[in-house]
Length: 296
Picture (cartoon, rainbow, N blue to C red):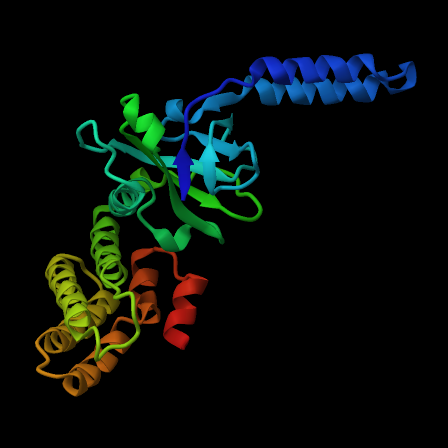
């Protein structure tokens, strides 16, 4: 998680460092020093407080790392290689008392997922390695009135080029499919119990099953209005899946839960959505992390 921290300007220091470097070189190296100074000045001019980031801004963390406290970032044109892009923003409600890091992070995780999907609806089309992150208030900045959360897509290693803002490029049927599909997997992972001991946490696993069944029910209903042979086949599969998740949610014991859950989980394997996605003109490569989960 990227964390907001109070703004502290480094512009003067950057400019001074560039001037000192120029004065320290010999004549034969002046050309290289000038180029280096130009690059330094360009980077300094692009520095912006994390408090002033806007939706659509592409940037590079000054530390080179996407996690940790941040004061400034380098905002760059999206056509240049970068590590992050702001995809949404909102304000956290609250009084003068800081809610705590865990509470703030929980709110950001939930709200940023929704904001990101408005900005880039098809998560399968994201560049490899891109994941959701956020800048949030710290205890210190909260005391000064900071309530803003900036939602970002970032890469921990490497960079990506171009804007991820694709919201206006989709047709209504595509958006209907993506909204429902995204909601199903959000329900699955947002309610994932912290332990893999199903017997000990059966109540939590049943709550997860109930959430997934509900999301599937809405998705299946919405797909009624989407034409396509493969979409129709997927709708039938998801209808069956909803029934299995419902059985898991109402299981009287762990053994019954296991039987329903195993089938339910298999029926929402992302690979089963590929033919419908192809029919709708959407990305068809299952993200590596999802493929790994269902392969295991």
